[in-house]
Structures are given as C-alpha cells and as structure tokens.
Image (cartoon, rainbow, N blue to C red; front, side):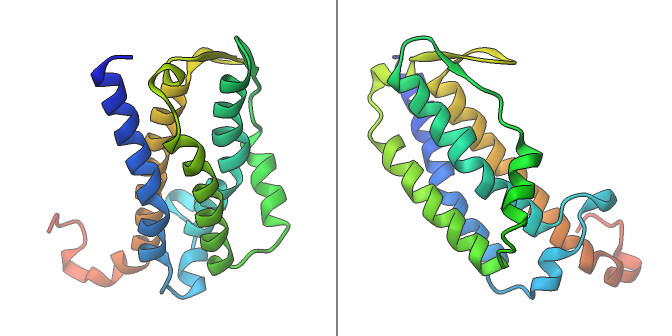
Amino acid sequence: MTTAERTAADQAIAILEATPSTLQAMLGALPPELAQAPGEDGGWSAIDVLGHLVSAEEPALRARIQTILDSDDAEIVNVDGPAVLEELRSRGLSLSGLLAAFADERARTLTVFRSLRDDQLGRTGRHSALGPLSVLNVLSHFAFHDLQHTAQIATAIGRSTYAGRGKLAGVGD
C-alpha cells in the first residue's frame, strides 16, 4: 500500500464520516413537505435520496467491504438499489427517522472502516457486473456517491426557492 493509497482511503473515510452531519444540517430543520418535493425533472426528492443512502449502506457498502475482507477472491453480488429503496419506503420512515437511521448505519460502517489496515485496502473481490474491485475502490466509490447525492439533495430542496428569485433566476450569484 502506497502513501497515496492510504491518503485516498483516509480522505474517503473522512467524507463518509462527514455525510450524516452534513445531511442533518441540510435537512433536519426543513418542513417534511420540502424534503418530499420532487427533484429535477420529477426525479428523486431529498427524502428519496436519503432513503437510497440508508438502503445502500449495509448491502452495497458495508457488506461488500466485509465480503472482500472475509475471503479471497470473493464474489460481490450486484444490489438491486431500486428494490431495496422500495422496501425501505414501505416502512414509511419520516425524515427524522431516515436521518437517524442513516447516522446509525453509518456509525456501524465507520467502526469497520476506521480499523482497516493498509494490507486490507488492497484486498480484492469480483463484482458480478464490474469485475475486480478492491476495498479502496469501494471506499472511494462510496465517498463519491455520498458527495454526488448530497449535491442532488441540495438541488432538490433548492428548486422550491428558484422561482421566487424573480428576475434573479438564471443569474449565477
């Protein structure tokens, strides 16, 4: 493991660690109807994105890492994200419930990630659709995934104020 790879892992873990508090700050005080407003082009609302993050935490993030750590050349199965999200939606969690669930799930995940040794970061498994993936690949992907979805949440909740900008709509600042 190189210094650059260790640094990349530490940075990914820092992003993963920051996401729950970032989302709590963004969403915690919002009225639920604002968090439920459809995203861009009728896409996912903020609450849908948060539900996706909760539903992906164990099967797509923590379990993948654990599978790679537990056996050599482990098979990493593809996760049906929409089906997992739909199952989570069926539980009818509130915005505050989803924020709490995400924080709890992520805390469990970070317990594993903080204990990763350099030799474990290079361990690989085989994803059923993507081929070989290392622990570092999964960490980096999910750090990017968190940032991408945080931006998506900001865009979704920002849509409610866009029209109210009047003549400023379309102006960069």
